Length: 317
Image 1 (cartoon, helix red, strand yellow):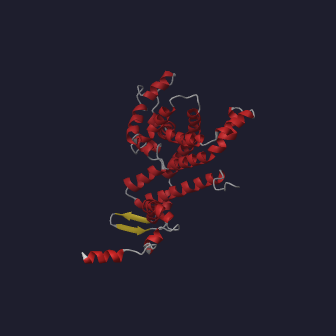
Image 2 (cartoon, one colour):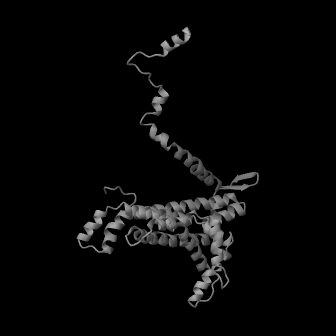
Image 3 (cartoon, one colour):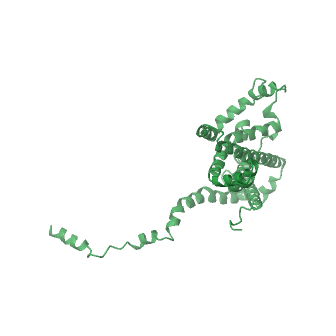
């Protein structure tokens, strides 16, 4: 008992004096360190899941990789890229990207304006319904789209065009119709997500600006051009950029419609070619080279678009 009281006396600080934190706690609580602690999870995940695989892919693109054998071969993999299959995949991916950007930017803006207006009732229901396709399994969606676009005259798409007097179409065996299927499937999946982006932008626009424009005699078109579009410009740039990236990275739509083997490569994309060569043909070095070229292509196109739209300019310029 006497020892316990002695210990308590030793641990009791004099009045007016507090126990100072040790140097480690003080360092972690400093204003210069705390921000880095909060962003550390992102930095670690980016380094492990993005940066390291990218560096490894670049290294692999200069190698011939066989079971139990790795050999550096210089630029041979890149020299092999220039072939008809690559040109076909590049053309398909570019056309797909342009069509999806056109559809997934213009139509969501119109739908968002309608949902934000007083003309539409049950807005919450429609917002939820538009987001459901993004949550749907791509495999299930692919099965449905294959059934809808079947060769039979009783398939839904052929019944629709037959109602207008057109002959049945083999949707999955023509280049133009196959591209329409991929674009339609991507539009169905991501339309609702983009609508929500634009809705968020519309709701941040001060209503007083529209009232002032009406007092100045502006009609609906003038308000859209001089009020809505300028405020939506950052959202438009963002949605267009992710649509460009998603367009060049297309793989799922092509794979689930043709199960990886489209007739005459009408559905072959750059990522599909990467999968075909790197996984199916077990040529990992060549597949890595295709991936590096795709990475550079996306980077260059995205930077050019951002430069043209002035996204890198400061707000005061």
